[in-house]
Image (cartoon, rainbow, N blue to C red):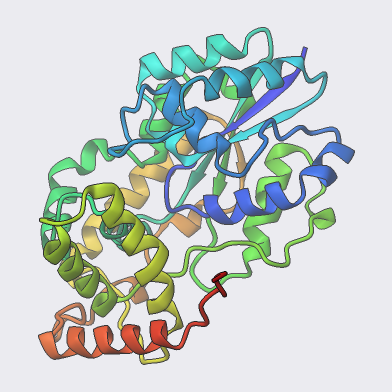
Length: 338
């Protein structure tokens, strides 16, 4: 009987970084007895979308049909530990969780949940929303939406643990705290490795993918492009333009950055959220890898109370657009046959 470790995110907790390292080190994982049961890097995403019936992905995902059954079959056939990793799984409803756990039987299922300071997670989530061309929202509108749903925020460790531990043994559940901004990325990797039960020092980390943050100007430019292209491109094409062309170009532009920060008025709200998340993790009685103190917000997560730093003038957006055009014009194009 195998042991399946389900790494369920949630989103914006270092999942892309960890998944890229696991994929690059899949042979090394096998040497340590752990199987990564996929044939290409995107298969976990397709499998999660498949088992959830497309509940959380608003665009067509060719290749998803049957993907979960293929991944689950590989997991059941492996005699040792197996890692299944997709942050989409953190959004699973009880019926999805039942489907997932039942499909992996008779394997013993373990859970890995990441926990991150909400004051750091909210700007990252908003940026991801803009890159994914979700319904257009300003930063202020996004924060108002968060306020309305904060008690059952779907990305909180308490909500995720309560759903999954209704089907799984808490003694086989792990919580990994995400280090504060600026910490060595290897710290997150080694914590994750301990939860998985492998030696993280044996991983090759060169070339690992990490999501680089956009700033306030980047976000407003992408919102403007989304609005301008809405009548001529479908959502999938818009996503491709934003994620594959414009976002990489924006990251190559060399200019002073203006990070998104929470309003100063959010400080008490974030402190209360950190206390709730800490209590939920403690009450769950899971294995902890990291430090719960990292869930508390720091002063750097908030504006200083003067002119909001996220306020962006149209001149700033125009300058960023010109910079992107110049960057794209200077990108070498692949040679084509005549």
